[in-house]
Image (cartoon, rainbow, N blue to C red; front, side):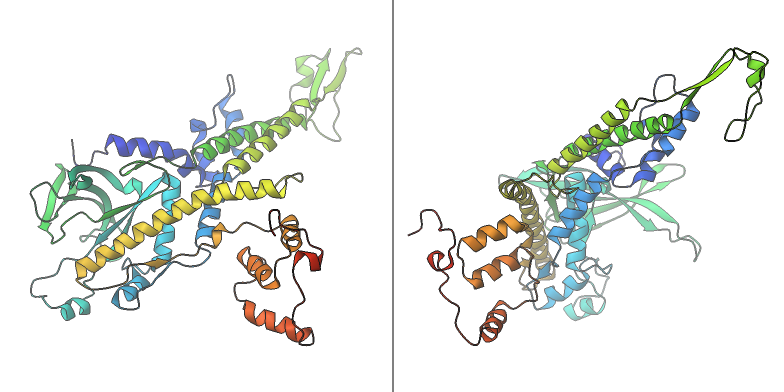
Length: 471
């Protein structure tokens, strides 16, 4: 197999996530794809099809869901718990200016899109003569993280070590600046990086391939490392096996595609339904050829029995199409973790909480996967640099909070909870700002109440509903 050949596993994974990648690029991109997702009707002319495509717009259900996952998880930044050198590296974790949280956000979004993305830990090779830690620090020769999307990976090989799978080869497609280009030219050249760690080889070796005009992909450089393994950590959102996944938004994308096609039909039928169909009875073709039509114009014929009438659309199909679009939007609402449109008026508080717990349970698992991968990579960085450091990261869990509505608040008040607990629940659910100090607020309420302590907050004293089973 040629070095540039994409493996069948990677190709299949990319094919599965292709509709999602197309949808999140927006309506202009979807229109540019033409018949790929919007079939041409039988006997539809090219001109009519082009007009229908240009009149189609995209309901961004998948994009809204992805943005919601990211907004929830990164409502507060991810931070390193280390206060030393490792924590300082997290301010520029990839040597490209991204801090740990911004880097993790990009990794997570790619993982939600494709089902898996990757974090690789690397370090610049030390030039000859650089032997001390101080010299390495002065030249910023320290470990860093690299974001790899599924589309960057050409393939991998694995082997078993200590009864667990490890990566023995990894092929990565990357783009580097062309050193022969003009100083103002931004020309890039493609390069394939092959990391090898076969059985019996102590350290990982690297081969770089570049494409030539005559001979195709040729070995351009190779060198050894001091890495005892290939430092690649997957971040899963749809794991199906080791390094394998399926996109978690596949069902949502399928509904979004159905909405795209149905909306195109709806816009097309509305175009024709708004303009009555003219019917000419008893007219010669010569009478109609070359005539102008519109307000203020008339037609003349010598046939006194000639008539001109109009046929108007009954509207039944329009109503059916509108209902289909609403149904699809409702289904996208149910499938997506975050509702892409407001709930129907008849929804119950219990149903809301059940739906929310289902959604956040998936998001919670994804968050745990991301946290684990980041901490593993921080551990690798300390190993490479030979330093001690706290590899734990802090991640907000506020996304697990359910949204409070009037029914929730009524239930909590009727339970007879203390004001302190009510304030804590309100803060946890987003009704009170994170900046509010609950103890200070309770003290202020005491002062406003003439310094009197809160009265009895038991259900009997407040008239609240007793908790079932409580004594």
